[in-house]
Image (cartoon, rainbow, N blue to C red; front, side):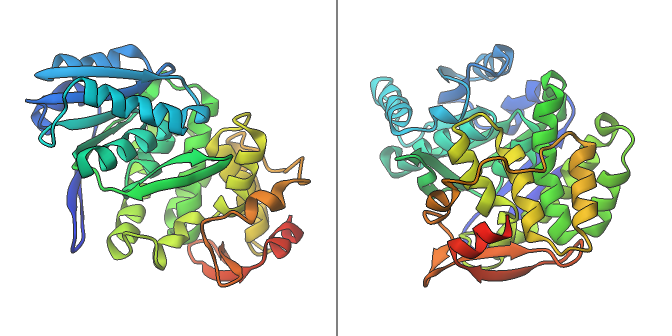
Length: 330
């Protein structure tokens, strides 16, 4: 299946299928120097498959985890490209989860003012969310995604076969992003996830549904000046928890924690139950320093932070709040 993403300034395809990574050379232009960025937690065979299909591959493996999204690893990736004499006609391919996609996409955006970037997400979270839309970034001075750029990929390949290597915790963390999108924009998708009896059997339909939501939002608002903020449901508190926990919780788990405070009382039970169904956390245990992280939120403007509130499943509203008001919701 091919889902096109288009706007006035960019256009690319999201290709979804089972066991399609082996066809990467038919889907991507790999007849050049190809920097393949992966991490130590991703099965090596995925990067090797892309390398074997590339004319002149160079593989960079960063340590697994959010801690690698730093300026040092970012600089190392750029150094490899310089030493390998990459030109503007060459490309970067991310093979991994959100961390790999974020840092390698940002490197591609900066190297020689921008070279081609392809994304091959290998986690459910990155497949339904971070691989689409062109957000690239690194963390800086303890603040998540503080430095980055909007830089669209040339193509995204989503091979559902790679999800077979994920454990339940990683799958659930990715599902949190799909739940987030369904809660704000698609009651039918939310109900489908809510009633699913076999996540494995239903994954491709869930992935497609989440991607169609994100595609629609990104096309209308590519640089998060308005509507795209809806994708931040659960993230205002979630990012703060993630920074405070220092990698002990997965991104999707933090997003799950950030949803409940921002929904109406009458739908809280549905959100709570769907999170519990998939073993996602529902209670924030430490709040002492959260306000300091919330105050650095990128959505801050004119003395307030733009938050997303869900009054009923499938719809949302934006609310401008102070950091103190957000903490009080918890």
